[in-house]
Image 1 (cartoon, rainbow, N blue to C red):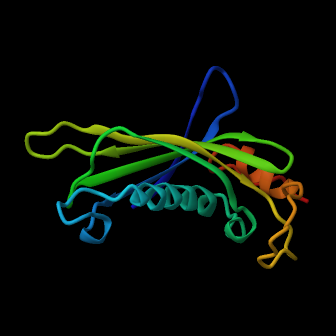
Image 2: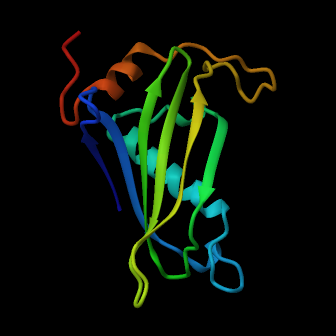
Length: 160
């Protein structure tokens, strides 16, 4: 289950946030039932997808490759544990965006809720003609995308 919410940070514009809730499945773990580090990327990308889906930006993913990814692994997640991934848009530049994220392992019997991983990553916008080119170049984000990401939740775009 995923949701999109906003919060006020230092009197700045309200910042888009995507939230994805799931459970650690067996495929996400090693033989001891502890998650693979790569599962964090999937949880975070699911939260990012919800953020973009809620903004109507379905064409975002084929146009926004990751160019940088940094994660700190703070605690293990275990098979069957509920997980909450939170992604927040940190900055929109002319051709790039940066996001910050937290991945939480929810409470288990005898174990409190724990921050399992956190980090940041960056994407760039590439034009529609890149089709997997090795030397694809970044291009400015479409103005409509920037507007969609800067609008408060539920607010409709202005009439054209």
